Length: 110
Figure 1 (spheres, helix red, strand yellow):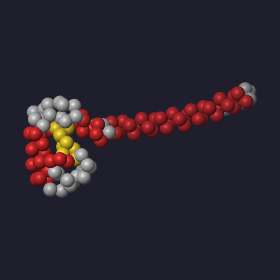
Figure 2: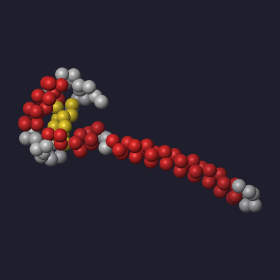
Figure 3: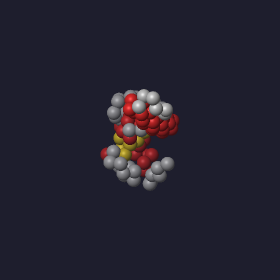
Figure 4: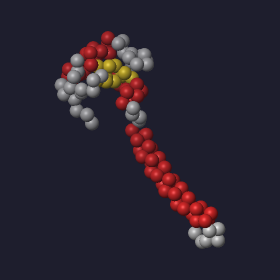
């Protein structure tokens, strides 16, 4: 979990920015009355800079796009898929060797 410095200023400035943007995502223009649906993104990536000019109001989907992230379960799914791909590649190599042996010597046992 990321720790922010001076969270009271961040919360105050985030509330100001949400009001300035009329509770609308600055990227996709999605309007939300739900406080948890909108996030604050530090434009310059400096988590300690809570100045109004550095805070971007975004919905959760756009925030994920900014960070090129997906839902937490997707990371587990990605890891599983990467392992399966590696296993398949290993199996393809093994079968390729067998095929080569058969092509070189059709009567050989494999």
